[in-house]
Each structure stands twice: as structure tokens, then as C-alpha cells.
Image (cartoon, rainbow, N blue to C red; front, side, top):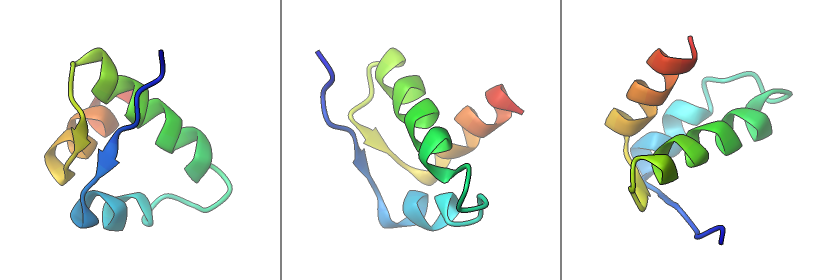
Length: 55
């Protein structure tokens, strides 16, 4: 039931600030966060909210 989540260019740029070796795990966590919120698009704002929640 995993639906695809779209990343905006701004959110992708934010993701690049995360060290490359943890980026795949961070991407999955942020995508799950967005899906749990019922969102289909990850914006810089959604990224910031997810990051705030995960610390």
C-alpha cells in the first residue's frame, strides 16, 4: 500500500543537507511522516516539520 510521494525541488535541496550515509533512511522516515499526514507531496515545510519531529 506504499504510494509514491513527490518531492519538490526545495525539499530535495533540504535533503542534500543530510550526510549522504544517512540520507536514504532519512528519506524513508520523511516519506512515512508525509504519508501518515495524508500528504502526497513533500515540500520544504513538510521536510522542516518532519525534521523537527525526529530531532
